[in-house]
Amino acid sequence: MTSPATDLAGLLSSRIRDVPDYPKPGVLFKDIAPLLADAEAFAALTRALAGRAAELGATKVVGLEARGFVLAAPAAFAAGLGFVPIRKKGKLPGEVHARSYDLEYGSATLEVQCDAFTPGERVLVVDDVLATGGTIGASLDLVRRAGAELAGVVVLMELGFLDGRERLAAHLDGAPLETLVVV
Image (cartoon, rainbow, N blue to C red; front, side):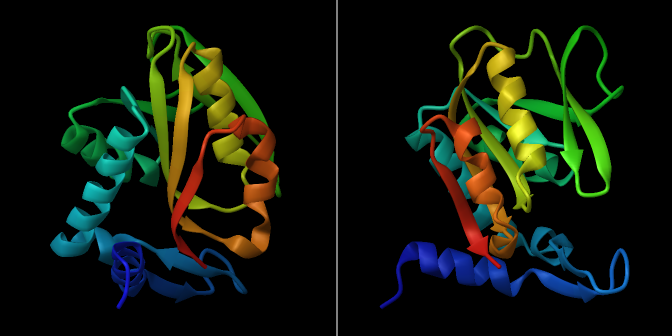
């Protein structure tokens, strides 16, 4: 007999399409568009994320630009919580906290609005993929800088061969990091 987590992982995995040589030769891109287009799979994912937000005592759900928005916003709605976007530099109005981080091919900067959280709010961070950990790590630093506490991180898909989980350990400060599908 399979567990509900195994059933969920199987459903989600079956709806993630491999696209070879995208965005460049030698890369195997994991396309979540078929998952999002499938009402059953998308609903199951949304329920799972909303359930974790409730179990972890989150008061807000954060989504990372861009595909993290598509996952986090409906989960926040389903859990009855607010949604906060963390965006690329220059995309948010007003005062922002910014955090730059290194990528394998350069650097990037993420931002969150300074008034996105009230002090002490518990935040669940949601994203589509954990690769090297740079984007999520920078986001966790921003959440704390903005005055929130990290309830946890849930990622749809982890690229385990890139060791992002190990790189995130220092940013988590004991908060759980969960992935629904490991590739």
